[in-house]
Image (cartoon, rainbow, N blue to C red; front, side):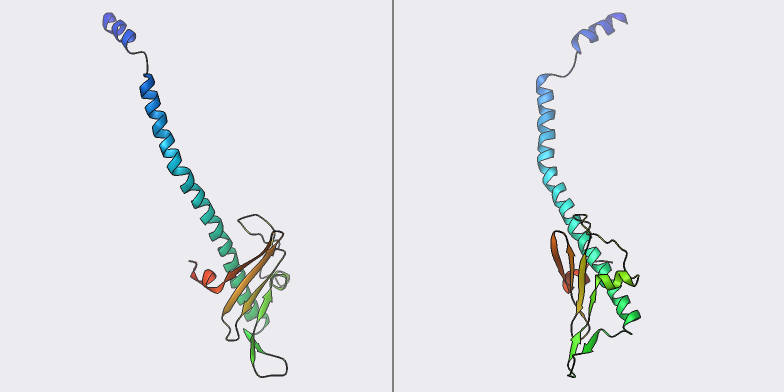
Length: 149
């Protein structure tokens, strides 16, 4: 038995250089494929998180209009009978407790300093504009309403 162990110990010393290079090449190929995919996933998740925040602001504005403006999503323009769409600011919603303060965009972690939710004259969503230190980001009704809840 000792002869068998001695014989195995001399011939089985480790991996050859070719085997190690083959493993390194396989790992490099996997990394070349995986790194761009991971970057795209992260970018898409940041965009989706921003749209989700805009959706929360939109939902809060609907609650604000229902609670504070008796459900009037549009109002007649001054001096006319034509209807104009309602507009709700983030500051008003935060003051009345419909939104948390401070509120930030998930993609860049910047605090939302201002913002407005605007409605059309028929009372449907027009846009959600959120302002941070980096500038204003505007979301359309299609972007917000198409997102899954």
